[in-house]
Length: 108
Length: 117
Image (cartoon, rainbow over all chains, first blue to last red; front, side, top):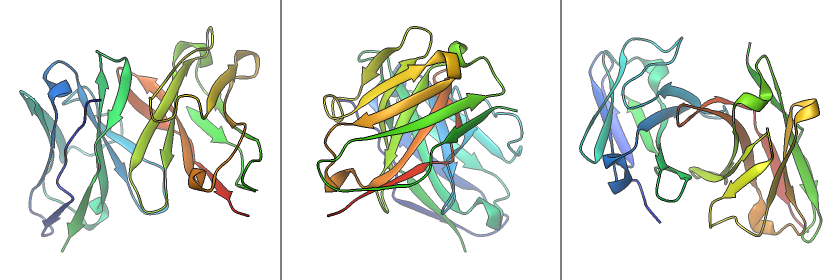
């Protein structure tokens, strides 16, 4: 089965930029999306189709993809952005979805 | 407003059966597939499988195939996740989520399932 790789943790100072990567072979031909999950809450979609921000998601969240690596960038990070972030992709070969292991973003 | 409302927390014994539900509202239920996602305590998200509510066509992750069954009743806009023989390792939070453009765009509030003797 295909896998997605994310760094376990990212630390960022308030107001600075946080970048979270997601790598995997399936990203070469499939979109990546990103979910934010705060403790005790359900996940929330913050980026779809590599770089499309859903309604209601702040502009400081942006997405990109190059080759097999997708990146979620949080510009001007705020304390409220502290959360776990999961990438997700559709594997068109198996017709199944895959989640990355998640990245814990800490705002110091 | 799109909403997915899941059934309440469950406490079961190993070997017991269970069905949890996910009711959609605020959108056309048959237009979007529904996924089920597991989150074990302190762990990440695991995609379990999905269903097309129009015809109940399902696909499963190999990790869950044969241990759970996903179904839906489009007449009441509800999807289900069920087990016929629970194990202690099934203890987890389970989420349903709507699919749109190859992403899960709306999530339910989660159902906590505890399996303990």
